[in-house]
Image 1 (tube, one colour):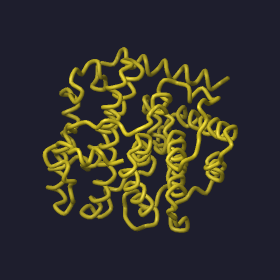
Image 2 (tube, rainbow, N blue to C red):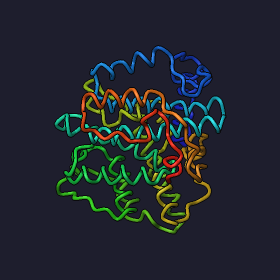
Image 3 (cartoon, rainbow, N blue to C red):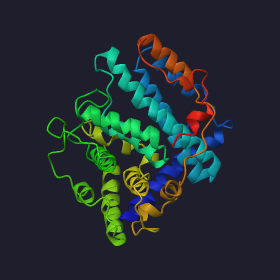
Length: 330
């Protein structure tokens, strides 16, 4: 089966990177769970000094924590560290999108994010069962597609997987998307359209078939290289090694089904869903224990307030801590 060979190759590439790279991603090189080294701090300086938009700094932190969480699965096999890092991923992702949305007010729409990048952060909150945050993000994304804000503007004709996730949420939450205003895909939208048409099926065999279709599509996207002109930026998320075996589109669908009270198969035929990465995320059955601090969040938010004084910063980040009343929301 060709998919087995692709997964094997991707696993080998990721494991090789973990074994040889001495960069700032890896939990076994960072004894403190929230620690970062000088290389990462230097990278964040570009957001402090105005080189990049502040909300992109949160996105860097979200990817940083996501890769660390993946590393805990493959290298450390430490569930507690996975929980901690993925919890940070979801909060940084939330701030990426919601602060970015607010920045549109003072950046004249220039701080909007590409749809394909934004949806990963949305999906992570669904996968982690952070339903209140996921709903806030999802409603904001749909409002943007309906031209009511500029978080992702009106979408992207070629962001197929991203559109699949947003449409799933719209069906789940009964929120309408004005496809006449949005940049909805005009080309072949399979297999996403097939799954969307019957997303809430109760047929376990049909669900497994749908998962196989989606997993095959995911691996195809993950292994298409970017071209010299960077015209394939839509696939840039899948160029990042730790995301190539993280089927977040499929996991989002399954988690939304569970939230809707629908049953899912206990096992899946496609090998992508039987990797350690997929299984770790499938095993999330309740909201994760939350971290008590978010490194660099306070600094980035203070800089954001300097650039955009009218931005509303969440009160739970005033002291770079997260109070219990926020942690308990799900």
